[in-house]
Amino acid sequence: MHKYALRFIGVGYLTLLVGVPVALIFWRTFEHGLAPVWESLTDSSVLHAFRVTAIVAFWAVLLNTVFGVGVAILLVRHRFRGRRLLGVLIDLPIAVSPVVVGLALILVYGKFAPLGGWLNDHGIKIIYAYPGMVLATMFVSLPLVVREVAPVLEEIGIEQEQAAWTLGANRVQTFRRVTLPAIRWALTYGVVLTMARSLGEYGAVAVVSGRLIDKTQTATLVVDERFQNFDQSTAYTVSVTLAIVAIMILILINVLRPKEHT
Amino acid sequence: MGIRVHNVVKRFGDFVALNGVSVDIPTGSLTALLGPSGGGKSTLLRIIAGLEHPDAGLIEIAGENSTALPPQQRNVGFVFQHYAAFKHMTVRGNVAFGLEIRKRPRKEIEARVNELLDLVHLRQFADRYPAQLSGGQRQRMALARALAVEPQVLLLDEPFGALDAKVRKELRDWLRRLHDEVHVTTVFVTHDQEEAMEVADEIVVINHGSIEQIGTPDQLYDEPVNEFVMNFLGPVTRLNGVAIRPHDIEVLTDPEHGTVPSTVVRSVRLGFEVRVDAIADDGQEVWVQITRGEADRLDLKAGSEVFLRSVTDRVGVLSSISA
Image (tube, rainbow over all chains, first blue to last red; front, side, top):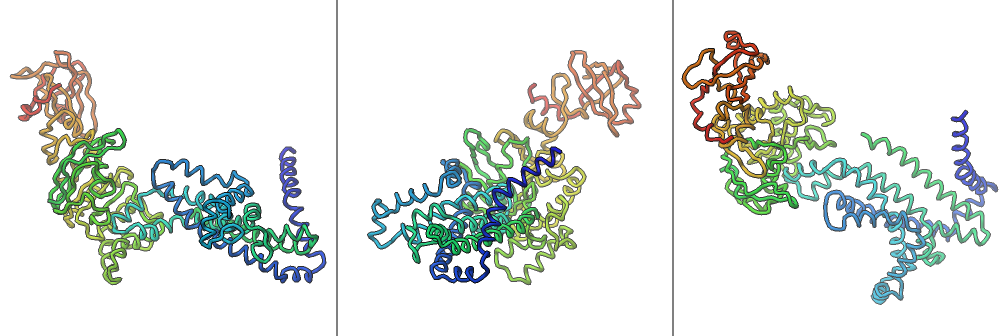
């Protein structure tokens, strides 16, 4: 009896929290057939927003992959002053609200901040432009690659790398031929998580993008804008598209996961 | 000279791992670095390989000052205790690694890899992954990988330490034979004195970051310079206050010149040998190692009166070791 009660609570909780809302969004989207969905998806502002999201996510994933592997190697393979502080800083984005991240970026890179002003004078616009949005997305997805790769690096140890050195391989060759193949599944997993996080980012990007329609508006910002303006059909369609992408990513993660053990 | 180590000092924080170590290892020799764990022998090996950097001192490999060279440029082969196999590569891929890095022609690599796989008897496992091999096979693969690049020096860090007793014994014999075939200057680290004596031409005993003694297995066993070496290389007991090997004591039933009257406490058979525990009449405990035939002839029991005498002519050396 006890067992069934627990199951009931578990399933009920998930149904109310995740199942019903997601199902409702799908239902509302397709409630009047495919025509309004198609119309929403071909709206030029929506298409532009998807492009902005794709561009920002691409750069954030690329940069965080390179940076994440570098930091993981630094954290695991090197002993230096401030190493633990670096570890804490890497995890900071999990604890800090994305809105705070956005505001903090404006404080550094905004037109009226010393660094931002200087960059602006030299023709480099960060805030209300792609660089700021990429920075904000990178910040919120910062720990994902590092936290996937670091434990695997720890586990494989340094001896394979040292063996490669004694066989004549330089640092780059050792990384490419020994380290990278050993961490490849963890890295893939981290990249997929980063991608999911980047596509769905709202708060930090909302602050630094300025929400300029047809300029810096991302897919998640479109959902918010259309919903506020009673264009619920478009809001639902974009939401569902994002949800489908997220579900595909989740499936991808679960396909990849067992391979970590081989 | 194969390897020259001169006044090498290495500290880890406050811990002195090597305290001014100097040793010359001749070309083509098979040398053991022997000592208790934490004594500095692995650190010395890793410094020779360039995997650690000495705080002071000099390393020469084949006449070249290698102190500042990175491991890539030292042309050494290194074998790790836990194999350090490249897990995502086949046996063939592992052995070919160093040659591929050196961009040798593909034909040459294939021929060389096959030759090495034959040498370590792994030809039929060439396309397996390390996870599909036993510990002994993995270590042979690691050895072939290290030898593939024709290193000037082969360094092995407790190479048999992770293997079970039987495989360890096989690999020891095999390493000895391999060295007789390949003749590369070889240094291996071990804490097992039997392993060192069985395999090495020369043994360097290292303890507390310093060299205690360097010599052939016979020299170290028969003429240890101090009690640490004597204790580490083999069994030790005391007769007349002098440290002595228990098999260098003669057991007599009648007093003769230079004998010490003693009483047998017990005698234990350990396969082919018999261990006799006794108390000398000065109250000192002593134990003697004799053959089974001798023990049967003497008919020793607890309480038997015996007379013990040193039979070694090396007693002069041993008596110099203070109690």
